[in-house]
Image (cartoon, rainbow, N blue to C red; front, side):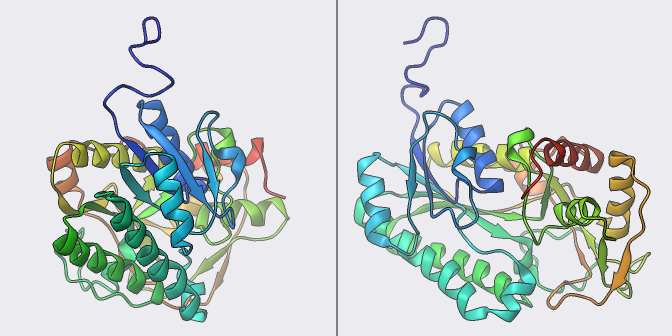
Length: 337
């Protein structure tokens, strides 16, 4: 036991070891950091197709392989004595999923199948699953969406995430899997200069990339049935999202679970309002171009976060200004190539 710390080798005695698939990616790296900082054993499993090894904390093992490789997944679980999985590894661009549905079904559905097979083979019975608000599709409601709102996804990405929830439900019935599915709304911000979002499909880094290259940012769609004509989304700070995963891990450690939770702030922000927030955070006066809608984008997606607050005691702490400011600071510290 370390002097004054109560823990040995970075892991508190009695806590489980969690494998984070996609743990070298933008969101995954924040989850790994939060789990590691909380004293959990962590191993990262990532093919580095979009992740970066530099984001994995010192002392955390990195297994470079694809979740489609069930043999590699099973080997990693056995070698690192894994007792639970946080499944992040997936493709996530709505527009790309419309253009490449076969690719999304292979990566997202076959990848989860492979992972569940490896979990069954090794006796690993705990999972936190990265789902999405895209499962809701085109909701016919201006109110925040509760978890029991009818899911009718309108793009292949959302379909693959909903299928993932069905898979876990059915596997749980067969083998006793305990699981929590977290439906992310729009994730933004950074937990440090080394953990910025470099995604090519996420709104805020897309705006930064345009500004850094002297171009006007684009607003996809200006004729939605919203007050300013642009899409409305519920933005959640990535560190708040990471904390929601730690809360879910703690819930699974306490016993059986089969739960779905929204992870958002319960507040809608339009794309044009995000542009205004970027102006404030960067001090840059810029204009944006109004272009056609992207395929598969609903007009409004806002979470009801009542269930996760009641069950897990989790509440988002950061507002949009904090998200954009932290994202800009990370972008300036380490701008993508």
